[in-house]
Picture 1: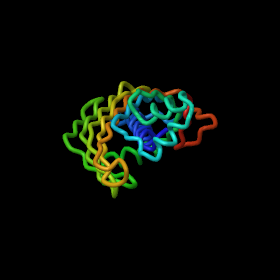
Picture 2: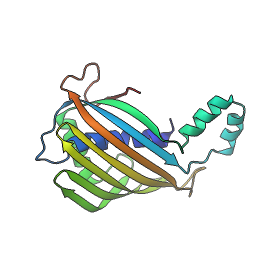
Picture 3: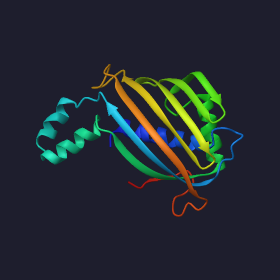
Length: 190
């Protein structure tokens, strides 16, 4: 999995958890949540040094790596253990528009009933991203949404070549027992 896809899957997992309880009037259920996350990445370029190594691999391995680099949709199912405290921290960070390595601003914010939409613009030391997020809270046990981002690196081999990332997710409450998954952790199921 590429770093971009991992970033998007993390983003979708967080938004999935937020979708489950984004509105204060909707009770948040702590426990085990399952999220189906489908991501599509396009615009990634394979650096010349990697192309040479790729050409030496068997055809099926080449195809698998090219698919991971983008183009074909990829679906992942994760289980996450959420507590009310973690939800509140993520929800607060969403409102503040801050990530560890990026400064983000939200515009065109709509937060009504069971829907939350906003445009997002983020800048870090080596990239700029813009996008749109839609989160729907179907109930206290189910949510869905989408994230569309265009990320442009400002340095490195991908510099000035935009990468488009589209993520759709469905998340649902499984139960109060997280089993072996610790609070705040997630596990890829498939």
